[in-house]
Length: 205
Image (cartoon, rainbow, N blue to C red; front, side, top):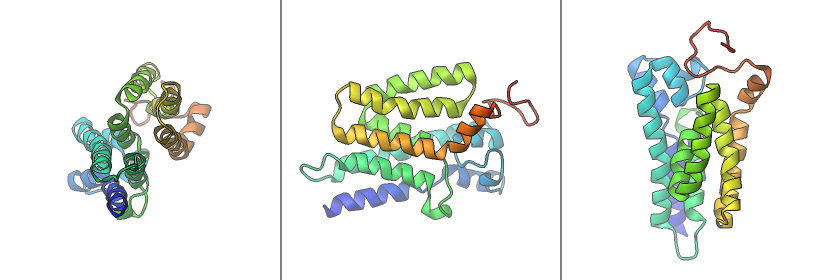
């Protein structure tokens, strides 16, 4: 049990390492949360710092989720199948509310992808492909992210996955909805930023 608690705590601390904030400080000596959308994630890194830093942030944020799940599997005790799921959730919570950066982080989608793909590859692949298609058609990253998060527990439930996975995915979806609440309002109002839009470009352009 002690090892499992250590794994969960370590996963939260790992998730709390916000690479977008660190890279923005390193490259431009700015706090990325004061620029663009104000979000500490890969999409805003793309807007503020460009493609290279954004790709690196995306890869590292995904890696945080993967490492957390691996840690959970390595340190879980007998009959504690819930530990990897708990580690996955802890890494996402850490990304969203990082202890190292005044609890103001990102929206957790990249870390969610890394964590959940390590737990359930095929369901995540299906939800991810649908989300990518939606982003490609609409250019709304937030919409694709929300679709991904909401679809995942449904696909897991339909596929007969165990209750820890299904309920873990439900929590992931609720976290995504919570972190994207402002984006949801903007989507409904038609004022959400589109992927690749430039400053001053109409939102609907």
